[in-house]
Image 1 (cartoon, rainbow, N blue to C red):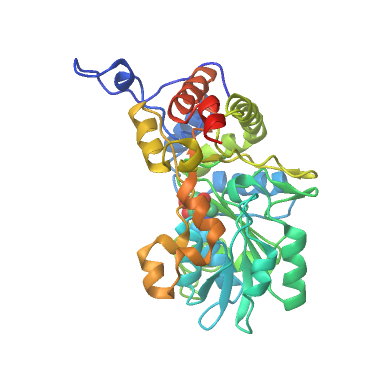
Image 2 (tube, rainbow, N blue to C red):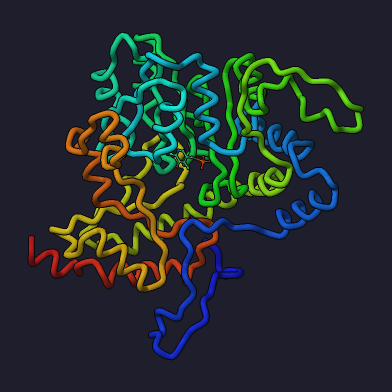
Length: 411
Ligand SMILES: *Cc1c(COP(=O)(O)O)cnc(C)c1O
């Protein structure tokens, strides 16, 4: 949380607007961009080298150093990181990959696009992370991998998942889209499984607009991902236009187009340098929300487990209409009328018609994810949120949710 905000998107007021309607819209998940990012982007534009180049190489090195690993491969999204990891893992037609119903659709689509079949295992109702016991119940002879998501930045039960992976000889691909800073028993998220996939989408803890990164435990697989991300061209083909002189490249397989640009890395370099500073800002915002909403009849996020570091990506509350006196969707509308942006992370995956049609999934088969999906609201929670904005959020929540007194009477 910071003391003062920079620019906010403000729409011109007109006479029929109330004071609230005319107040600036608090954009959900707006990244905190500072002068260093702006200068580096301008430097990149002046350099004439906008595509994959030295800034991407430096960003990869900085990210690997931050994670305490030898190598990281920058991509244009976490979706690509998941997709290419699955391909590099040799997963395809006839295989099954077990993942969570409480995730962004990209997690599921990445599995589908390899030709493999996604299989869902319900989440723990408190941690909102995939439940190892549910995973084990879904294993078949076709299961090849587990794809856990460290939801909201809270690490999954990796001991439980890794024990299962070992017992059944499965790979683990960690979806770390929420979990850049996350640690589990001293081990950074993304370094415990065979692959770790990160997102630098605008709302994520490190933002490059669009962007992603992958860590692979196996060096050959990392090299394969790099090749797959650039059309399947032989190694370091991006250097073909550099001052080292033109070099022929060869197509070694039919790849994709998922490389990161220097323009994106220019932003990421400085975002990453401030990743812990921004985490600390969100930590104080988390504490502020926890205390300011403590007496309300809503469910606040569970406190982090001992011996872990929560990535603090989302601050989610659960609104149960029977006790809160307002439905989740009416609450979303009310917040919007106060010009406060909110998010829903997520309607459970089986709620979407495509997956229902294709896999015959029913929301009620995953009761924990289904209930969370119907009650959850993410409040504004980026490092850019000021004290005044946080107070505005709390005042609005307190106005719309039943007061603690009403709640006690009803109980
Ligand atoms: C954001 C997100 C993704 C996709 O990330 P992109 O970089 O936008 O492709 C995947 N999984 C989860 C859990 C996410 O939140």
